Length: 248
Image (cartoon, rainbow, N blue to C red; front, side, top):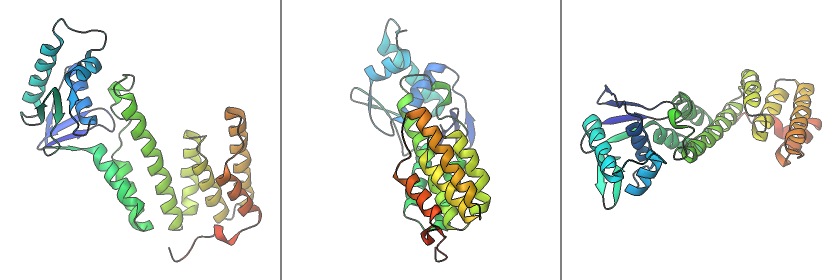
């Protein structure tokens, strides 16, 4: 079984033994096939993505050579030939990004304690920017963006699960770091306000609202959205709905 780790620089191992693929174009080709998640990618698309404007004199022959080299490195049955192109054999490959997505999906319907554990595992798979060595290449950008957006969702979900479990005080420094990293994310700011309020820091919670409002107005020309405005109102009125439900 080939293990492919793409949530960071590409790393491979075959049945526990590290696999080296040194040529950049072959690493790009393998990354593209992995990101394709079992779809058949046409030869033309693969050539265009991997070689770009530096096309070899015989593009299809160069692609076939790269595929042959990859097969020698990762296993002959890992890359399958299909009509007009190639695909990755998901029966023989595990991908950390796929595992990450499975865990996040499972966490959506789980109780808080189970969700927190699954999201902790999911986020622990990340080692850096997905497909890091290709982050400026056109073929990788859409998948990198998609995974990074899902990671942000997972971060928000993990915070909410921990809030539901009553971990508001220990969440405050984590959330302060997160809103520094994602200053335009209104969900994280609202969660910070709730964590501060539940920690007996109502003034700090309202100060957080003023801070994010200033950021949104100055950077986007927008007032805070409904979530932030509602959270501010609940804090001002000390709405009991902001308190943790002990039955969670």
